[in-house]
Image (cartoon, rainbow, N blue to C red):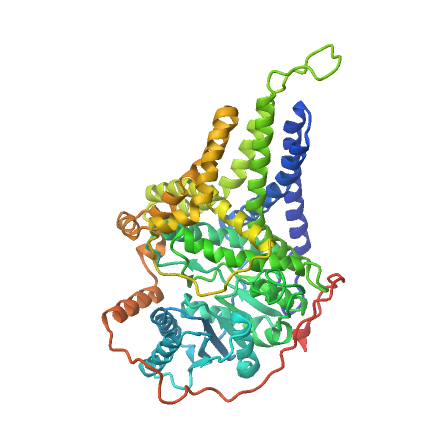
Length: 639
């Protein structure tokens, strides 16, 4: 059970032990089978390398599979992942003060203001809006964008009659980036509010979602962070629609599985979540990492670290997948998506320096490891393929040598482990694809789920094409992620600029510039293996095809006209496409109106935006000393 003050999680230790045993047993079975295949004709140094890398990647796959299985069973049985019974979200009224904060940095002002307005309107419609204030926290450096932000804020205050409820603050010094922006707010004005709800510049949340988060935080004083599952929306390119459809179909099930075994030590994804202000102020003063950038210095991916420090402080971190009405936007093409991942690679690799920090919960350490492994696994996959290619070429070039040097009475006939290879391949494919099939089954088994996706036949066709496309782009993303990991380890950092979120078609020249190395490498790989190791080449076909066609894949999947055609025929259609919820309908109307109207006030207002009087709070920097184990609950919240 969970400590008093938190959400009751029956059989907590049993769940985690069972999950760990299932992952370990699955990984061990795969490694044993792989070893049996490799040792058939004698084990070389290359094959030991293959086995080592395979063990890591297969364990990663097994963890994802068993999380998905847990989520599927819970969704099928209609059981909550934490309580194993009813949802812990209460029906209480909102009695605490909440700040909805949106940190921005050189963002599209029209989209930012429209998102705030749609969220505000939805919240006011619940009847509980009086407990909430909104704060637009700007770190913008571009003076023209800053002027547009202030003018847009002033116009929004007038439209909503929100003076004293909707605030704008622009920092003169944007040290610490987003984490520093929110920390500055907490130090100066956090004392006014019991909770913070953090939005990204592309976030939109329904009023009901905001109220549910607040009610749950009120009910459970041990809760430090409650995270929702943001669903991508408003995508107009094939790649964006692919991400949106896949997230809508699989994310709730996968998040349910994660919540089942993570329980009160879940993770924080940086936005669309509620945070207890006291917990954040006490526990989340981020230190600098030892060493020089990119692996040292300022912590870039702050969200995982803040969750770990809040959990270390005795507060709980929950993931509630049943809260709907939480939305975000994502990069619309592979190149912009990869650029975002480049920043995340650096931030997540930094987390490896935090694994041994004193007092962290074991699952917080696991989150750090899993976050880094999500990108390192691409490099490991590439290394395993390279080692396998080298081994196949070595064996192909030495074919026909059945006698070793020296006297030998009988020849060494090559042993083919055909059945074992087929079994391992089948198991791997099952672990990768079965979660997709389970996600599909959940919707096919529900009349509401089928109709929300345009019917059973269309849903099945969309899942099939989405699976094929995910296989096609996997080698391209492997190449990008591998190069990013190598760059960070080699000491090359990256800028942390604004994210491109609007639909953008990638020109051929830009695509070719970023994919030349994968395409040339794929072509050479194809030629060498096809000539010298034909049998192995056919196994590599899905990989090298994606690499050789990297530029066309990038360009064609970014075409807006193709995406619009897909929308018309219902390809990769999500429920938010077919029947947008009220908050998204409002957002679309606001953006359409903004596009048609150019008479919004521009320039900086005559007077500085009014701010709340400061109520200064201390936010101590957290220690990074190493050593020491998790010692159980230290309920700082109880005081």
